[in-house]
Length: 133
Image (cartoon, rainbow, N blue to C red; front, side, top):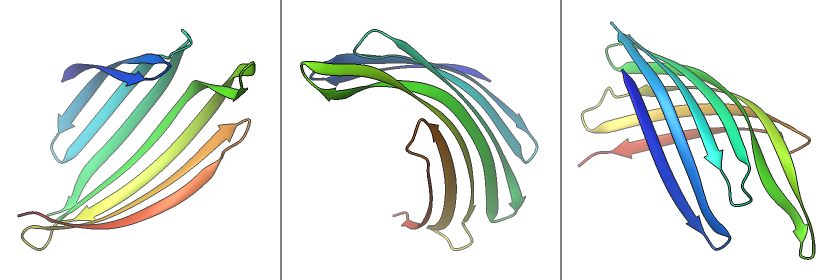
């Protein structure tokens, strides 16, 4: 199923526009997504990111997913009048699982690793519990 997203974020320095075409595919217990993100930032450059995700129902109350992403982002470094635009290139991998075995409750685990050049590489994990009313 194709989809197209458009988002505008307003900042004091100007508007940031993001266009996100994607393609979703459902097959039995599997869900696959491929997405591209084109972002025009406040200094007029255009950044690109590509994202892929696979998700499956692995048991009646369990879902699991894995994904990868890669792209670049321009940002300002320094203070006026000495500022410059730098590009951060990132590659990410993420995975997670959620359990919905109790009515109205969801238990979820997410892990992510991000490798950035020239710096800012990081990794993390999150465990969350949600209750619907």
